[in-house]
Image 1 (tube, rainbow, N blue to C red):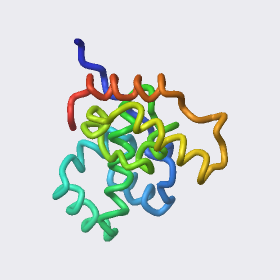
Image 2 (cartoon, rainbow, N blue to C red):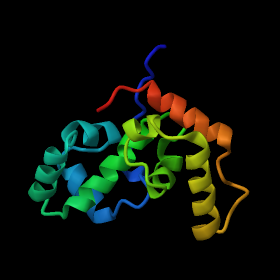
Image 3 (tube, rainbow, N blue to C red):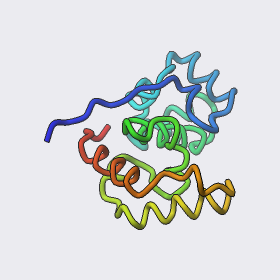
Image 4 (cartoon, rainbow, N blue to C red):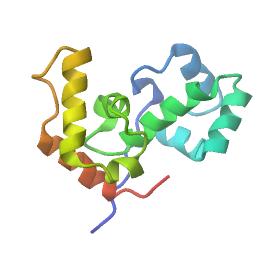
Length: 139
């Protein structure tokens, strides 16, 4: 099975990234999701980046996790935050997920917090996410 190309997006497109964190990352030359992933590809690199920017580790770890999930073409920046909130923190973890179980988490989150069921990704979408995740190289 051929490997998928990783998707890259402007960091500003990641949901929930603060303007302050975005500004610090951009000043460092990190303007896309792939820039961030290459700079912070390991836990120690993430901690080092956080220290150098005088941020808490979590302020870097969350955008890194979303950037990783956004590499999945069918997820992108539209669903990376949703998938993260459902307890999936990486493409590798997504590739191992059970489609039905993840879809139930997604549906529960959409209904409980966003009070929307009609815009919820379908089980077919979730299966596509998982299939595409299996085709991506780990960062």
